[in-house]
Image 1 (tube, helix red, strand yellow):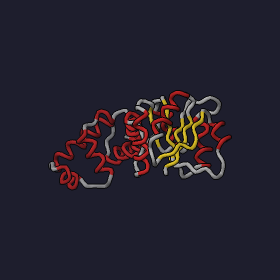
Image 2 (tube, one colour; image 1 turned 90 degrees about the vertical axis):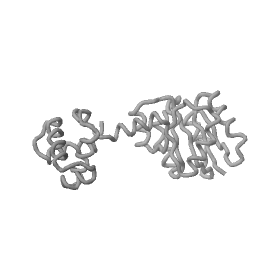
Image 3 (tube, one colour; image 1 turned 60 degrees about the vertical axis):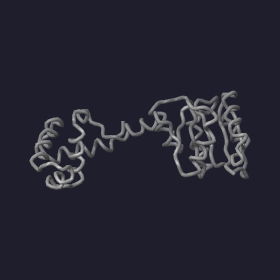
Image 4 (cartoon, one colour; image 1 turned 90 degrees about the horizontal axis):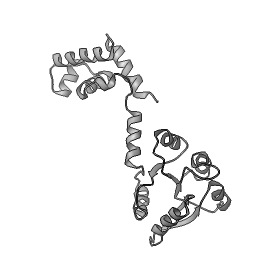
Length: 210
């Protein structure tokens, strides 16, 4: 039996989520409350939860504020943010504070049982728009990287990984002369004159946070 809880202050929405679970023989709602404070008031040491759906914009303590405490108490539970907030900063803070998923409230309640079973099968729950934010966040960031073509980025990546010009040429099925031609264009676009400078910019940009 999959045991779940909702922390959601919108009464009608919370009821619709609960209703979507009612006919599921293998999913049980143990708790459905409207605040972090109510959640901790009603839980006890005997309660085990597999999945906790947590709103962010709550009365009293916000979902983000209460998340670390919930994670500490239910360290093996999946904690899925269930919110209308589509901001990269909020998404990153949620994962930093212990969330394991992030769902924007743009799905129908009847989809929820399927989502829960995706979790139990080892999958992850994150809305497509927020997944794109994560990808963008961890991609290389440099004011001149947008000027590089896909081929040039691939060459720079391979050079940064330690491959020789001949090896890069073999991997990309181009001539060594062609690799050198692209390297010169990369230097010009990045405003550098040496390979090590281009590599350092690439490695720094790849690991940078904004």
